[in-house]
Length: 202
Image (cartoon, rainbow, N blue to C red):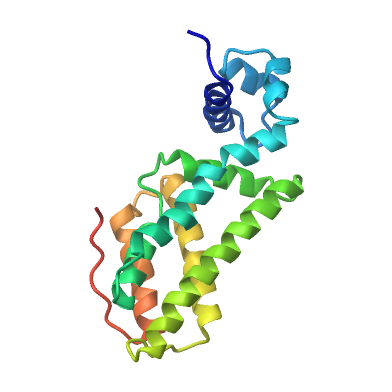
């Protein structure tokens, strides 16, 4: 049965993720092609260059860390629950989380590849805006008493997610997902003046 164009692209995206894990963000076209058992020319038939392929390979992570998080809290009225759930979903599932590993690799190469910098900056800004909405809604409802501007708190939460996420995939022995979630929630409690419910990882 012939492989469709969509199936071939999906295979290449998975191969690109795997190749980055093996060779880093400076992975070469031939290495991705070998991972997919294709020729470099076949890869270029679907993607104009290696950077375009790697950006596309990271879009699943973009969706997971923004769009999927918005969907998860849709319909939940309590801002304190929204805040904790959003923090929980912003971390690696474990130290082998491939999406987070890929983002860490691309982040390290952002100075050399502007496309990576643009992509990761856009994700950061969207995540900050997402947290701002939760924080400002909670403040407007009298649930939160913010100790700093919402932008400052939101930026700090996202920065903590990024920093702890990196430490987790770097296999820091004392940082698992439960510990890390609680550490970020501890900051959020201080920043919002709310005790916040305990995180419950699903």
